[in-house]
Length: 326
Image 1: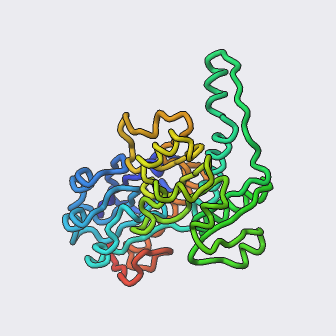
Image 2: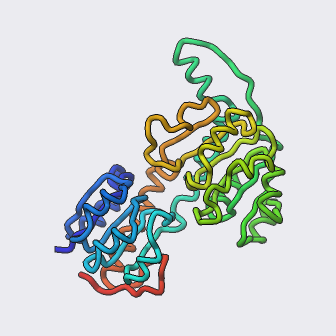
Image 3: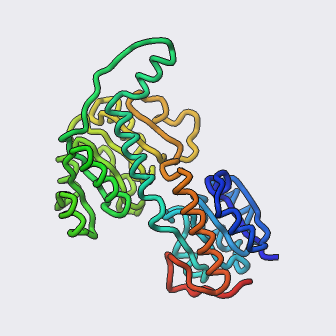
């Protein structure tokens, strides 16, 4: 029987049509609770034909064990930095993904983090839950400048919402959409450093690459306004954790709101978890019922198409042909 490994927890925990779509295939579904580290992933591959993954660590060693039986990997989501894409291509394994399904949800989460920081939300809720009435004065978003690094689907949605709050928007992206920028009054920065210098709030929406790893660090903080608020709904490794901790303690960075960490799930003593000017959510920026169903359904449809030798909706390595498996 065709066997499919399913590890994404939001897929499994959220009701919707994706469950019926997958069940209707008649395939045997092997379930695990991701994100998985390399050892856990290695233990599960070898006798599976297809793989619907979240943020599992899929290394070359995993792929070497998984082949030749593994024919398709269908990523639930868009980030493939935990997957050895080069080895997938070398081994002839199509790697599918689901662009355009979670940009609204992640943009909304970005503003949840921003508003929570600027309005001292958790300080106030903690106070009232403890039968207190302590108050801190916050700030308006109106006329503040938000800098967006990465003006893709999510970055654009953040820009739209920022304009609705009456904010000034500056952004940097290598692939600039002039039509969108003009329509929403987004200023194009000539460099990332220009975004750093102008921003009251800095919002990260770029992929994790060798160039963006540790991009936000002790080297970049002096280029920013003192007290800048930084928002990260991209990847934890874009921010150098130890440098961020030091900047938050010194006041160089006024607050850090992040949905992602360099270590997920974090150890209990992760240094960002106890700082009062840092808000961490458990990588749930795209976990809404609407978004999960879109992502999960897209990942199943992609898998079904590829397993039947048909062209999937979106593939990271389109040069690798799909072959009929079932």
